[in-house]
Image 1 (tube, rainbow, N blue to C red):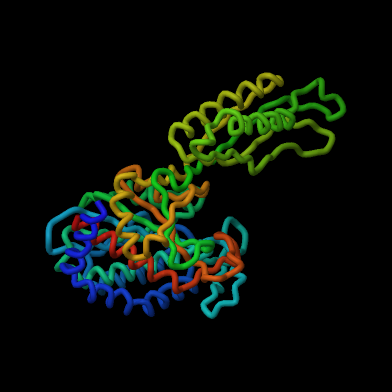
Image 2 (image 1 turned 135 degrees about the vertical axis):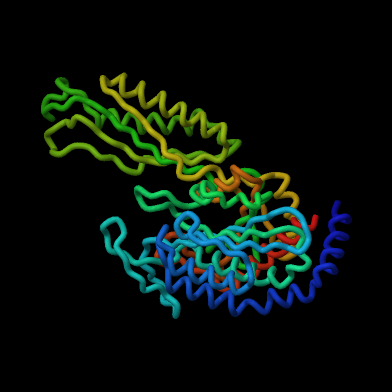
Length: 422
């Protein structure tokens, strides 16, 4: 198998003029960095990425691509049709920023301010989406110069609202799919990447199967009976019931979930109840999240949470209901497709620098694309080699090394060409 692939790469390299392709990638780095700095200085929140979309569309049109705007409110799609018939592959980048006030002292630091959910805040690309935009724009430019050799069609999907649309609005990958982004022409496979602040530059990390968790928000409403705090026997305490429910839910993870297969998490992040110190209130509400990496485990956990919530409340004389809202599905890398593109990643990064990772309990709405077509999602290193401090994503100090982005362009370019021509 290794020999066959080596031959294929050699033929592919000759057919595509590998030196020219490599020169095109290397020469685009200055543009790549400038684009990233522009988007970092001009971040926009989910479903409000108007100027971001304009700049993306302008660039794609300058390349001669067929461009569609306004998909899922602010999404942009560029279509590059090769001169030879073949499959359709999609590459995706998310484009929204976060309501985070930047604390970095960078020459391209974000100074943007806004009001988010009635709170004044800064706006920052605190998750690296600015790098994703720049990488996909650069990939589109490189591949557009080799249109005559491309066997098939490439869709460049710039997706808004990955971090979630504002309350009361639709958005993100779900809405793009609903509006037909994977059709006309129908996509055969989709690829995405995410830069990572804790992974050294030059490194790519991947996992077959579930690489990121499904994210579900749950709300538990507990009904008791209000009474004076001095005589609890004359009422039903919803706060006590809530405490018992929280304790019980954790036994689903510690005693029922097969953690040797995949990780799972149940977290209650908010409890609301009561008005005074001496009143046992009538009701309580809990809000939390469930993270799972296996579809069967996800169904089991939901089922047991419903059963446990109801029966625990009844055992203490109250009532309780639980509802779930799906925020993302499991980001599930198709095993066959992962195996197919792995040699492409080895080629651009070196086999030692393409590393198998453990799954993360963070979530990604790229998962919705993967529910419709086979897809692979991988992580790209963004930490300066030798750095002793890496700041997590979604924090004011989040930082990415610009020099890590070029490998993203190489990876997207190589796996696209290999996929279409294999």
